[in-house]
Length: 325
Image (cartoon, rainbow, N blue to C red):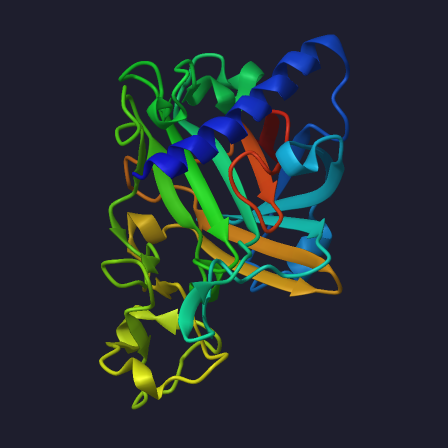
């Protein structure tokens, strides 16, 4: 795991814990509970009739970093069948952010464009994590060191374990998934946060010296996803002279999801200045790195929304409860 990822997580979770402490002093804003309604068949997408049966929760997320002192309204619904659970999130966003450092040929040099991507993250307990229900995900963040590169994200004992779903508008949504990972015990940045076994993680598209893109769309293969570069459809760039001023190439290559890393499927659509995102997964994947959803139990979870941003620049929920009915 890269140190920058740990830095982002620690900052995000440090903000999240402040909501838990504040909850002890004042009433949290918005709903704090999400009810999952049982339906006879699975919804195909956000327009499916099953969502009309669900109860809508209206959450209020508080901003941090660049969004400090701002609020974001996020609505959510949940339904489940005998085998699967479906979550539906909706939030306002003035534009869909899908740049994520795209390469552009400018003045004879390849330049990474400014801009990130929109994202949503959800964290659950696989095994009970001490104080997670009251302090949220920040209990996992160890940012005591003055050196931010030494911060790490981990549970405090081998008996604890977390489940992390990370939807990315640029790097995972086009493939129809959210990254599925878990949180384990550790004392170093690379130890605590792990990706589930399997495939799907986007790959950096750059040369060894990081000065330009290394791969491009195979001219003999039509792009399966317009505007994105899929690893299986990419070829190494041999001749850079063929490109002209203003040409753009994605900085990330998307990969096909499989195994436990691909347990969480996603359907995110940006329209009318808002994101509508459906996340869904089996109640029990059979993988030890995933939370098992039992309709007879209540689950604590936390959510963060990133608007063309990363690190601490996010909108974060207080600890929330998922209940089945």
